[in-house]
Length: 80
Image 1: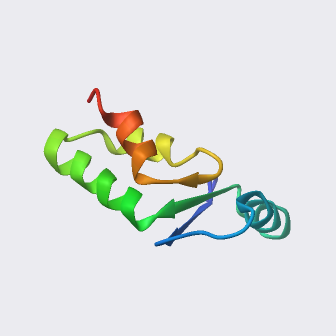
Image 2: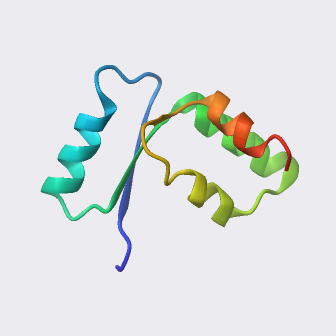
């Protein structure tokens, strides 16, 4: 694989997300790590089903650093 990423899904994240991301990207072959709340995934699914938003647009959205929450999804895809 040329690109390898990791998606961590949880209902809530505690602590410093940068520490988790840095540890995983420095000590594994992972190039990208996304921390995504389950709420954000539900929002992504809703946008996908209701608007048919492109899967590549969703993948691009997941490349952001930090913790992605439902509000982030709404801000990014509200105009779709």
